[in-house]
Image 1 (cartoon, rainbow, N blue to C red):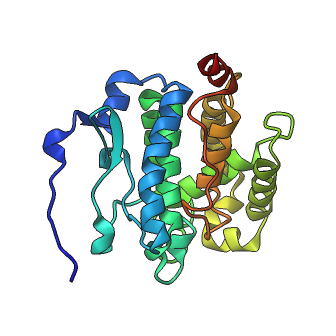
Image 2 (image 1 turned 60 degrees about the vertical axis):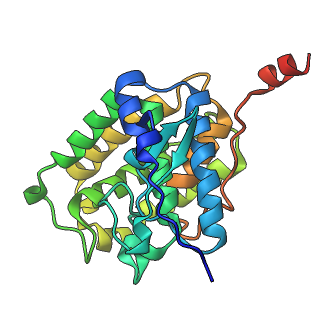
Length: 261
């Protein structure tokens, strides 16, 4: 028989990624920190996803820092609740039983990573901008998708579609960019988010995507970090999961060489 133990980890934590981002990384975390957080979260997700279990509420407040390492905590998937928008994959959310999909965790990890890379100040400004879009000016999204989630869907598609081959020379990233461009032109998106038929709406979302792109694709950004981020945010693939995600190396080749010496 299984042994059930209730464990409280919060008393041992020195903070969470949300609080640390605000205090320490308001202008953006260095790549090594972002990769360390991704690796730590992904290890926990791999254990869950290997059993077909989603975490269900992956967000900065649920990634704690304790004992010199980051830990994925909380398990709302046990009762299938979740924080809206940033922990739900926008496409999976339109499907039957969509919140049981493992790709929700990939979306959540992508949002956590995006927040670290952009920095607390810029990411909060982006969220505020999307919440401030006047919903009365545009048609409401179809079905269960809420308005802000639809904004994020379009912004992420625009961000991914804007990636050029000369910016990131990674075949997997190029394929995601192509898939995002096809989705932006698709009838499905026009039906699901009717606001995309408005040039004003698209340009508003594009301006937000541009802010994110400038933060993510700055000179010197680690390509393995970009590849992992793009995989997590690839809403065109609802089968993505922690077992299939590209694994970013914590140390670059130069550091490895120095360590070898």
